[in-house]
Length: 340
Image (tube, rainbow, N blue to C red; front, side, top):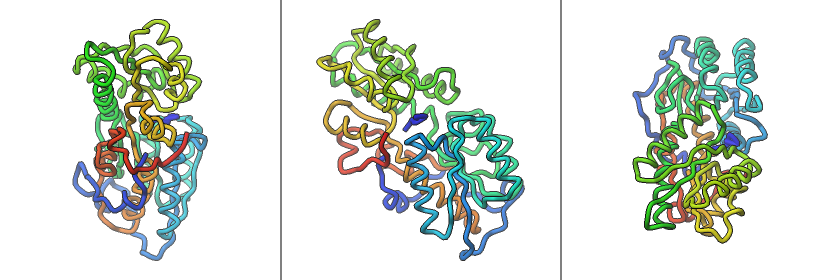
């Protein structure tokens, strides 16, 4: 999430060796209407990566995986930069469909609802579409395809929220034996994906017995996180645990010096790994985003070449052995996929 989330530790080689966890039956080439004609194994293919933004470290991690896999599998990849703008991304995909520039497109949707129609157009035109990381459609609690004919490798936002809550409740045990007050710093205010994640996290924290503060927006930059933390400490000095994007917590953490506060970050950057490994943070929700990008490219190229692939893959089940719940113990020996 700069959107960065959100949200990266397993190396590409190791991740590709793992079997895919599919939530539905494998797709086949006649699914979804406008099925692509299978390309021969020796045909050079073109991938369009419609990432959140080139300036975003999380998107860059996915791009590194896409580009690396393409370069070693007789394909070329291009990053189309929408700079977090939903309408721009819609126009970029529509232009790509018209020009027939790409055999495969990989979509990190800035607006999962707005992208539905252009993705339908791409599928109807015989382009292989891989929806990566964020769902496309109105549901944020599933990795199942919401547009027929697409391949989906997803970290459902509600699963992310519940995972953050679990880490937060575990962090509570390290700082207090009495009631625990947890502050959940939202990412973007009134952003559907963030709203779904926030609601899931808050509900799970409350169900676990925590008192929850969730009216502060931490965003996805250290500056935004620092401001949110200043306001939080002024109004709730009793806070025990703070959860937020890893970028926001990088700005918030120095303000907690000499205070008994545990932190849980959303995003497995190099910086986040460092904070967990030295004990400054309790944990991070670690999506292996470079590996996820490589897997998206693998699935898309395989389908374009006539192979059967899963329609649905849950990232944290398929590409980690710890459901993305990164702690000092589970991250031991791993290296982050990207740096903020």
